[in-house]
Image 1 (cartoon, one colour):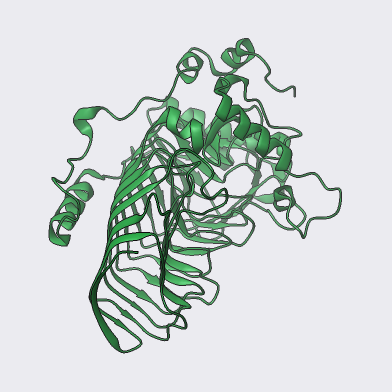
Image 2 (cartoon, rainbow, N blue to C red):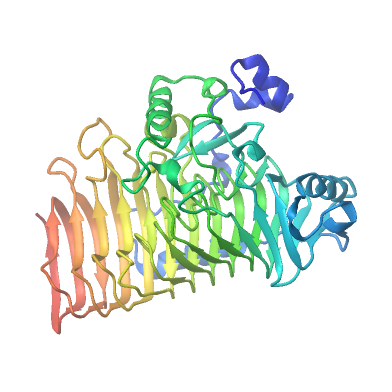
Length: 485
């Protein structure tokens, strides 16, 4: 199948909707933005009142009581027959009928890309219901409008993809198996463990970032075959009313749950275990009103990473990630538990995390904020409370302005109004690891009623302003102080 190379080809693929894809993505309507605090450092009680207001707006979609079992459309659960056409037919019938459930019974169903339509709930009916996604990259063509590491482009479809749909879901007790591993998908990362001479993403990644910097129209950023940019696992793009609930996700090529420019998103009770490169668990990007609750993350990268586009392309789209609630989740292995960045050029605000449990010698940090002066972005109004950390490998709280490129650009990031309250940790290398720039310090970070035990080294506090510790116990010593360096 040939790749798209011209605007005309792009419009043939996408139809009339393609015209809208050639202009910058719109920001949220101003009347629907959340209110802003009158000043920095809002009291915690006030902040968590706003969290309740956000929760009241997040309502999972419901679906008509109609079932469309994939086996009625030719699917066979033997792990060998290609069921892609059967899934496509079942989803089309469900959507045409006005919505309902596309039901996957017990069995192993091999499929290529699945594209959800409005009103469709893809439901894995039993723990023995398994979707095995093809290892053949051609199964994820034709190219779709997507984001890859924060830059918009035309690339492989996610394994489960939706574009500009409403009321969609993936639910049930079954397994989504990406079948990625050391021989499939993961080698495209181009790690030191890859076989010499094997193809990888490095050249295409650099070309994509350059296209974003030069403002090349998205329709002309054509990748796919021969570029080795791995697809995401689940990606609703510009969708409203999204539910992901109950399923188990295994062996993803890279990012696993990646809603982009969506609103009213619920991720509930999902179990993710995948240890490949860039295997982030849940990465809402430039979304609004997101609830992530009662999920388990055991990942090869960040467990939850909140994002808003990368570099010039993120600033072009210019939509923040905002109004996110994370609660009652379990984080095992990963680079960070709750993370903001590194693709955060559109900003992040009103992030709330509570009642999570994080514990693993292979989990690096509990709360992590990362950017640099190439990516920029303003991260503000971030609140974490009542989190129990058994152990982390690096620091309980990390804010790092030197991620990847470091201070090499013209867009210094801003981090302010971050509060960590009643967080306990049993073991870490550092309590705090905060690194700003002398010309752009990390500011207004507050820790209240926290206890960090078995901390091996003193805090790293480089270029910080107004870091306030109130009743913070570190290795048995209570600290009450304001720090500016």
